[in-house]
Length: 383
Image (cartoon, rainbow, N blue to C red; front, side, top):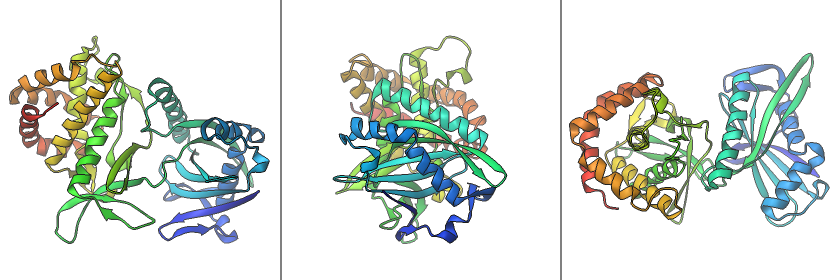
């Protein structure tokens, strides 16, 4: 079996040579590990993939890809470094045996905080897959730890193997130098960054709203939260002008209603707060992913509202909510005047106060016009 170590670049795969393997492993994008090298990192990922004599991998290939092969039958493995993050490091793994290659994602954490978050996310992903079996989150396959010894240093790396979303890309709002406007820019490292059209942008935001609503649990008020566009949590694939959005992970799955009250939660109030938060959060990004806070244009409110109600109608078809749930909720939301909407959003500000101060400032600056637009949209929305 041939194992290749690679870097993912905008020009394609770049083989990792001996000089690169000797470089320090990065704990974060700006911090080197005092002793571990890139070779230690790649070797650890290889050991994780084939842990327990390769039996977990064989089970995944047989159960999920109808490939009843043994580890020794694998011809080639490509282990490709994709991204070094603050908490996790991302690698893609290609298994070549027979037919088309099978590709996986391996996420690695080395810090105590990173390991805690990674292990928790694995549990959340498992819970959501078993409970809802929706196709928008990567399916988790197995997790584990790999012990590394480098000189006098001993480290334990936590890893999870999960589904890889091929040809999906991170995106952020960015300024188009041709006309000076801000648009969604899709970060395609292989074919080059490109701007989404207005119709594609509408579809991206609508699908994000729909996905988050589909994962919302009305009975328990649990939801996927926190998330943020600046973190690259949503990725997009556009092929033949068909837009498809996925969510890269779920950090938590719980109710945020405890922020507002310790009393028993009214499910109707909870889903109204959930919707109100969607209309705010989906409008927030950082320019180019790392720049100043960006507040999305007015079209986003219509897209968010459409995605929310579309999801509720889908949930009614699978008996997750009553048949008339969306219609009754729409009628209630339409009955609110601007003052009532303002009171609801004033309550939500407590949530943002505990998170990003820059987000909160952007929300406060834009809240008045947001309320007016949302009120108008709710009057005109069609189910």
